[in-house]
Length: 163
Image (cartoon, rainbow, N blue to C red):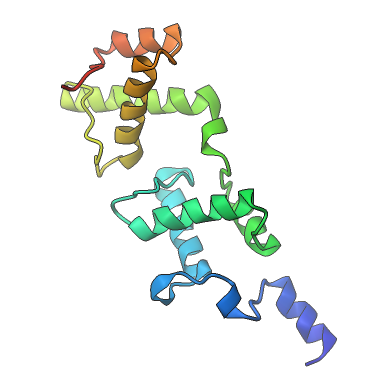
């Protein structure tokens, strides 16, 4: 093979040894899961697939694996570039109050529709909202919630304890 052909293949992220690239069970390739993530982003407007995503559990695990590979500096540069190009969030804990506010607005919409704030943990219409509600209860119980957030949640009749 000529050097030019090698260079062209490398430029598009060609995988020379598929056994060492950690292909996913059932022969689903990295590229296929990446395309499923792109579709997820189109639907949900972000790349924060829950690890236990009910609609596509494999995608949730794969996203978690990508974050782990990135943290351990074991991610191929071409894959990192692909994920960066779609706005992939590497550290979901550092997203700050903007995301909190946006999710709070989704809870307000949920309350308007359902007349309460008791989002099921496995709410298929918005899987992250159920997890977020649980996180708010945990933060409240552990005294790790700001007064402003408490006030906002109380203003819509948030239920702190489901039991």
